[in-house]
Length: 290
Image (cartoon, rainbow, N blue to C red; front, side, top):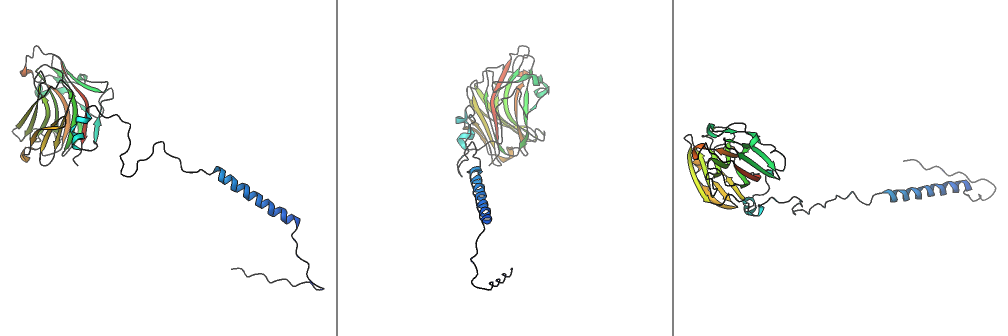
């Protein structure tokens, strides 16, 4: 700390004259004050009143985030909505010119019958269509990777078809070790009129099967779902359970992935007189097991 300066002695010959402030000093002080006031005003004028406000107000804690996305068709009768499955991990609304992120088959057809070709798959107005022609050329596609347990749902329409064409939503083993790895056909339409649908649960090295069947007009749009847990497999139609298997020896042993297939079974009709057939899919959703 600085030591204060000692006072100077008074001049001799009487009282010291009063000290006066020079005019120059006053000008300097006044100038400094004016500059300070101007600087303060500039700061107040240019200072923003608050940070930039986002165009969308953040939701309050605990409130759901607002979204402008249009709900998928048929959401009100989906198993996910009715059973509270939460948000899907993967969704395909088929809005692009071609399915994205899928492995589209290109090779011989089911059991060596006909051929699976990418040319059989098209997307228009948000609808995926797989078409099978009179020669057994058809299509299929797989969504990799799969998961060990979970839930899957799809909205499907099956126009009246040739009986040689089976329309399927199914789970297939990631390890490609069928039949030991299992197979879960949670929607398989085998009749040409599409008035009933089957559930086939394949298991074991001998390809044993457990079957369910439900009467439904599958020529209309319906939601088909499956839930796979360590304890059971359940099939749902428009959010309502219609198939259940709780035998853990029948459940798949490893991760499975979703596939969409229109398979050709020439033995189910007249292979020399096959009518062009198709299946349509509006959306597919995959959910983790929470």
